[in-house]
Image (cartoon, rainbow, N blue to C red; front, side, top):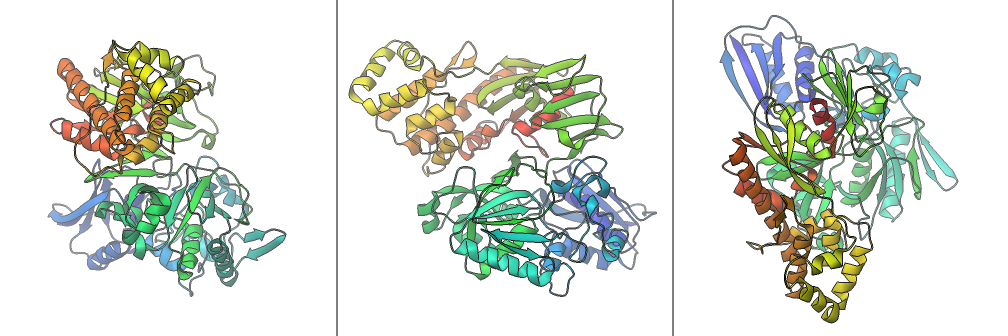
Length: 640
């Protein structure tokens, strides 16, 4: 008989599976470990004398994942015949596992306060990766010879078996802290701890700190206001629920091995008065950030702001080392009750594999999909030295990256839509879907090809005022009233008309929001605590969304004195009704089985909750292991 452990996970990356295998191998136990679509199955010999000890080790050291929901065990027929094995095909970019964090804070460890601490299955490996195949000689670590101890670790059974970037204080990377004309170097445990103590004190005292981390550059600062694109790093785990209003899944996600960025509601009144009612937050993920967080906590600092940068920037203090880094955009995770999905970002989702594909080179947003003997491999284009293919698909909005006699362009909405069909392996079935990232569009997959049922309609602010005047009978009087009696609102219309803005930029301007973007409207909607919104006009004209009817409706409500919070909430509720009504209509006409939602704009609590309510009778599919935003285009592009 085989004792079987089943871990339920919706994520296709092999990280957790490989960690399980490493643990089993460290006990030299026979087992079968297999990853399926929604679970990982581990079968052991039920009579193995080491079984209990191995299971206890798994329970105490297996990293928590945002995508693991539960586990169960049972007996099944058969017995495993050999010790399982794993391969390391590409680097990860994850938070540190519990064992590596423990090691980094153990004074007796050779990695005490060593910020490059990681094992085969965790840490910021991707930043040091140059090109395939993933071997040490193809990384910037090729210049560093591992010490005998580190070399032996990578050959021995355990969590560092097959570790490409293994290092410690003995063979590792020196780091320097620069302030004006002074430099402080760290190359052992004592000097590293002092380095982080000095850096933390500088932040406490209001200085800015640029750190070259294993996830790329981060500029840390204390401020009464977050700069655009910045994130609040919560460095004290004991204070997270005091500062933020979180459900259990959000709290667990923040501390998971993925260490995502979450947009959450703030609970602490001081923070709300400083940063607003909701904010992007993150818990420290890699070595530099974790060690800095530890020292900040000791100084009584419980949070710090940072912005991720692709390259170095000016700061009062600079912490760096002499190795080049690759940049990946960070992972943003959306959670609504029991639903979670990745909104945007390359980290965690890429590099990745699909076990099936076509001989098509897909190119989108700096990412590429390449066919090989194992299926499709997706990663940044710069990580590949060459590729052969019979066909090339690239986004129509991009300058061609390669020359090919069979070169084709693809639309973002069609590629995004197709990525969901590919992930769920819905080829040959009928599927309808909506894409919402910029302009809404509606699509239909007939089992062979994608058809735009309602194409996106580009919003242009040119001639906005005249378009509003001629929208329908009486519209001219509305705009005349605005011009005569509400000059401040009319000035906003003139400003929009003369600016290069999209629909939600224009909406935010009309609402008088400080953050003039889709994100600004979404954050404003989160402030609403009532029930039920107003009906915003989303009239369809020639099977397309009518921008001017939408903006005219907002103007009318502004004249009636409706506040920006209620209006913002109503906008997303109305969009939810618009999408669900049209999707159900198209689904009925086409006899489709499933509905797809794709595009990062669906990651708004008000909109998504409305869609969940309206589409509860339908099977709704979204990306599972890839972002619903632009990064998924490279996956769908393979199949167009």
